[in-house]
Image (cartoon, rainbow, N blue to C red; front, top):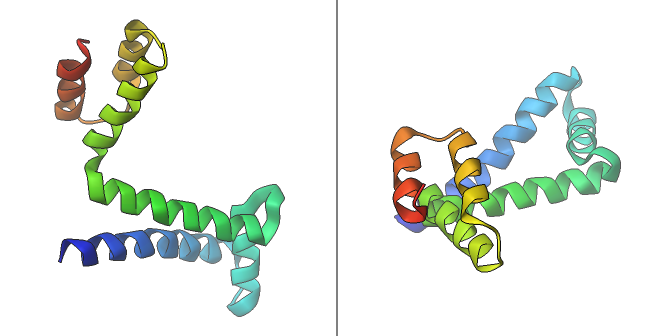
Length: 112
């Protein structure tokens, strides 16, 4: 069941984003889809929009699989291993728009 939920979330978020952008175009049908993809793709056009929706789907699946907490911890551990200072990590964590509980968990992990 967890696998199904992850796949549904990975497909659902890009679809919702595409529908929202399509609604803002004021167009209908294929013209709305084409325009929405071009808007999402920016300078890369429709192909960029398709790629962006794919990347968002992959990111959503990863977040649903590992959870935001585990993902942030892994990212900050990697940055510390690459030589970034703990003080800069602490400052960044304090500025993140995250819940109090997640901030406390990150504080425990990285000594903020």
